[in-house]
Length: 213
Image 1 (cartoon, rainbow, N blue to C red):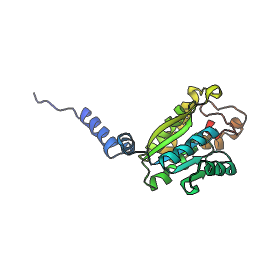
Image 2 (image 1 turned 90 degrees about the vertical axis):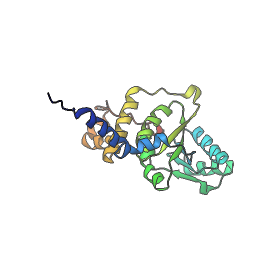
Image 3 (image 1 turned 60 degrees about the horizontal axis):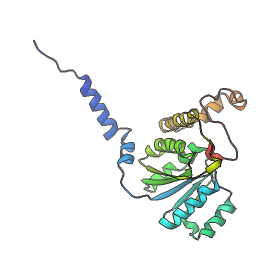
Image 4 (image 1 turned 180 degrees about the vertical axis):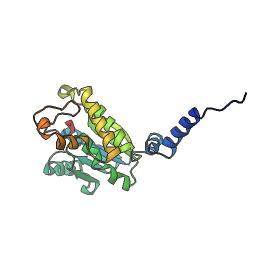
């Protein structure tokens, strides 16, 4: 009796190899295997202690610094002068409205500059969610993230699992479509979201803390 080789496992292995070696997962493989030292420091706004640490790291490591959604311009510029690093070493970026925006507003620019490894500075209670979002968005451009936490002591606010999952889903949606799922939902159901309804998949807004989104 003639035996036939099943193509199923071969097809699956071949598909996985393509996804990782040449397909859409290739940038993530590059980010995971990237052994280059850090090339840039990214501070997520929401707490001036993050900026203090980020600026000191930029001075000590002699790395360029980007502060996304940080404190007001005058204070940030004063802090840079106080620490003693040249203003040309620091980029103050105010485009982001939330954690996802911290990455989506910058990641293509970082890729164009050849950045492949970023030190990510944020508060310890915000780090897990920001790394989850950042690994998806930055990883899609082959950029590796190394997290550095800033102690928040008794001011820490535990973030719920739903919030992490919703931002993680939004990150994948952005990678797939180039659009923010939250913006799409707000356009589709503006009254429900403004009234607080229909928000089971979306994080709550905190106007004074962009990184809390």
